[in-house]
Image 1 (cartoon, rainbow, N blue to C red):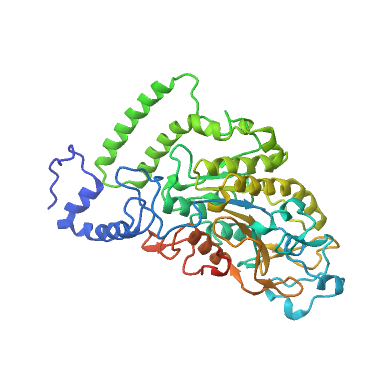
Image 2: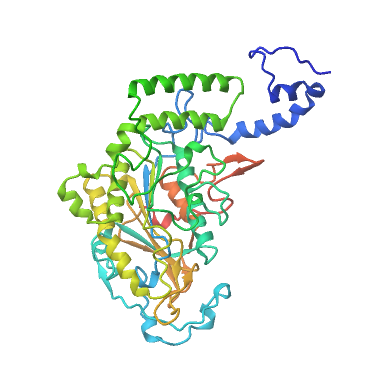
Length: 482
């Protein structure tokens, strides 16, 4: 028998109430198991007390949360060179390419995953030892080379596949399929944000890169942790985040409307136990209101001095790097800066096009590093540079290079990593990582570690499984820690 008498919650018979009464509550047993799993490890407010990822009862999902251990970094700026910069033309010089130019590569160095047909092609760019560390840097980066003693260059990166889409996803979410939360979503879920008036996770990209919004998706994490995409092709602070200002309703009246809407939503929520989607919607409305003044101020680079603007140089990417610094000093947890829409570093036809990309980014990146350091921010800001993979040391056509996922270079700066340090090597031609190999899972584990998170403990229960950014992989690369 099923009791359909009015309930204490105002007479509403919910689906959960129906299950609790149907067949003497047998249907609720399965539901209880699911909710038990969720309350044990899942959700920003039900996370284990000793782990990051839980807001206080009076806080919001983006309230700052305690890490597992003292962090070396508190924020991240990820400079994403989408398309795949060539390691042998940037930070991994290979003199052997000059010696064997035009010859077929040794068969034992060419992985069967992507059998190359081209001949070995030396870099058209000269390398020079720079800084006190004497790290060799390509002539492409005269400005960055002056900061080389602050950089930790990883020459032994590798990833799963040599195609853009899965490698974009792997670098951003640790998975080659668009079904997992991004690094930025995991960070804001685990640590919250230091500024409740700005998003915790901002993505600056003019247009969209290959794959698109899945790269900054929250996936199964609550929606409040999704990255906020800003199309920085336009930087009018009044329109860069659209629909923040209502020209017909005063802020006071907007506040009254939001207060009423919050009361209605909270009344709705109170009759339905926990509803993560509704909680995220309530918080998003509140944040939108708070952002009206502070977001416009944060994106107004006209407030910077002429000297600071000159430090970064001109152009779309330069302005994005300056905004990234402004967001970092205002407490945004992670800012991801894409070099452009699509995959501009994907130089199959002519690797000399790397010079144009470097000219648009070199001064801006060096300016960012210099600016952060002068303000005392670099020591606890982790800056990450790199693409989704590298490129082959062989020629595609006569002057281009194909994709290479087996060995490529990235660098990190600030935030607890060794400056003026090189980690790992590729083989003498630059095909594959051979010493100190670092997979993308290892990179993610290291980034989380630098922010005070044990990557094996930052989990979220979804669909009957405890998910994490690094899946069942990943080792912290302790050799690069300062």
